[in-house]
Image (cartoon, rainbow, N blue to C red; front, top):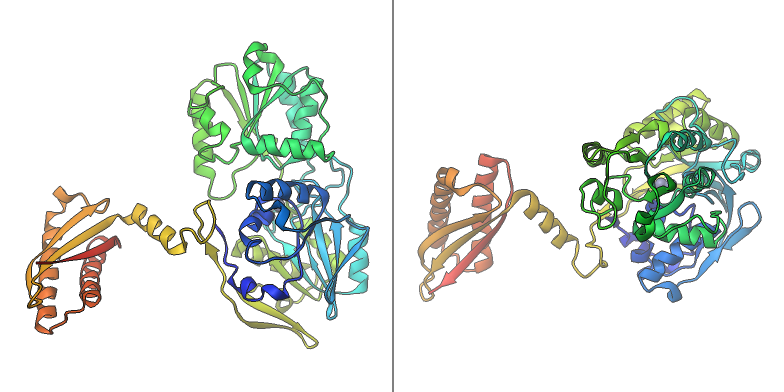
Length: 503
Ligand SMILES: [Zn+2]
Ligand SMILES: [Zn+2]
């Protein structure tokens, strides 16, 4: 699923650049699909550009775009009438930034995804000083990460996870498997450091995990001792207490390593009693069920499973950090993003607590434009927006409509209605015959299908009487009659295919 970019495409010539806050999938993942349609240079920090490079290479786009590495706090990039500066922040991936755009109307600050970690793994702090300066210069509007606006207090430091993992390493006797986000380089560093301290060698399972470790080490974001890593295939030749396996699949993704392992389908790794599995992540909303299933299956295979908040911390700011951010930046307007409606609402409450008028916290509807003029802020009409489905190969090959059909087929099934008509007179001879798959179980639904047949036949007689001969019209009539009837009876809307045979 990628965003609808038709508005960007219409205005492609006015797009000066893509400016990236950090390298997470929800912030760079759509670029391989967008770049062929909207050409503009890309700016981001070293790791962000490094991760994007890998992605563009896979899509054979690497030599078609201009990638530019920026240094936070050091430089401004001039883009048309704008000056853009990157401000370092902490997040669950290194090299994250907020972005200040200096415009002729004032400064617009985009927080990126952030938290404020007073003791981050790489020692690079959220640049509170610069944020305060921006606040003094006067910020017109702040777009702010509202993910954790419902959580009180402060989000714990990433180091808390390191301590918890240290305990797990100290207490585990058998093999250790740890699943986490492939992009959480600091988490990976803490696992690798703990492994080195406890005399375990590290094997890696999962493509994105392998990719990210290569990129992060190459660019200097991961320190790995030269004897630490071991091939997955060699794991069997080592004693259990000398192994830690880092895997993908912390979100229960169906083809990811941990899910295959939990299902007993992984080619190289089989769970045995004595194994300890750590899921160092919490499920993203919507993934609870599949993650839960993996945990159950791992227990069933005899592993001890450790999961949940004891071995994970969030990468997003909680209430006290959000208030601090508002106090430093002092925006005239705040636009919360990166959350559901309830999170945006909670953010507005927080802003009110630190003295912002509620009408200064704006959340536009999807696709709604916000205009900044010398009179302040106003809503400026709608542009096309929303998700566009892609089938993983590209956009344009099979479109949104095809994918919606596939979804509808999966959820409601289909139904074919065959009608026979006489060529010469256009009169209705027989049918309709109705064939269904994946819609209702025919043997138990004979009554409904018989009634549908009767109604469709009656409709055909009306069509004949009114001398409608155009096929597309006849098909529409049939679809409507059958569609309405089945919806009324079953609450479902199967795909209906009317077929007319002339004899
Ligand atoms: Zn993020
Ligand atoms: Zn994000």
